[in-house]
Image 1 (cartoon, rainbow, N blue to C red):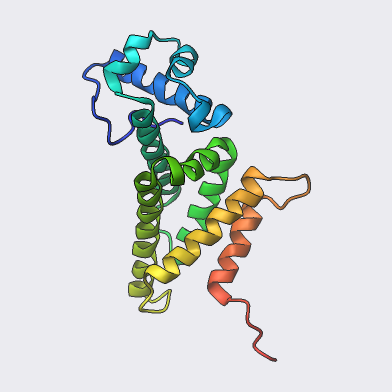
Image 2: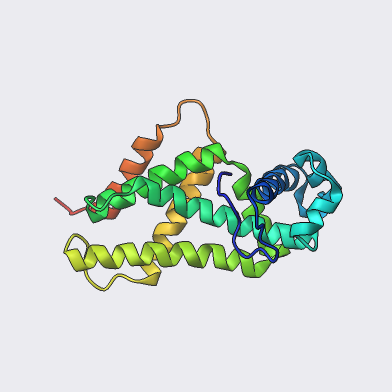
Length: 207
């Protein structure tokens, strides 16, 4: 994970050294939670992986719950950043959805631990879990509405369509980025086919 700082941190660092220490703790927490799950992970395991003193942990976090919550928020920000970096103002609505999905597949393949940690958040910290998906859903909804305004998509698209697109993207990521197998289509091909589904649907015209 490459974000400089996870959101919703109770004790934000004030120096560059502090920001680097915080980054080490979040990166170490990613590995610790991914390897052991929330309940078996430990603060000492996080600090050992980070190469920092135990006291440094409490400079930024009050508990294991707090760093887990910050990590989910940090990961959510990383997902959004990966999509934003793949987009440009010149793209049309369908091109945007293609690029966003391609970026997500690439991101998930390089950060496979995100699925385990986000899924575990449903039980460890339901508010963070819900916020993660609601944030993504809102972002997609805004894109779909913009596509409707431009005339590339039909008008009236909203949350149901946005969550349907998000569900498709999440499970494509699970199948092709996390459970990848030899011979799978390239991410570009997967994004293109998903894009075709958005553009044309799957119902036969009957011709």
